[in-house]
Length: 69
Image 1 (cartoon, rainbow, N blue to C red):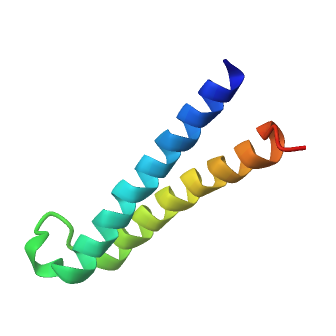
Image 2 (cartoon, helix red, strand yellow; image 1 turned 180 degrees about the vertical axis):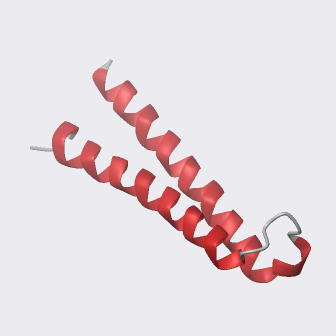
């Protein structure tokens, strides 16, 4: 059961990273089309911070909860 939970947490984090990455790509390719975000760089920075959060979660899971001893 523990392995299933860890796998689910990793997949969730990976999905969140993919979502935020797409947002960054959209900002970079279509910055004019995103009217509600007047400060594109700040918006991209927020997305990168979110990606970092989930990347860190994956690393913590690997470091402390990996069964690969």
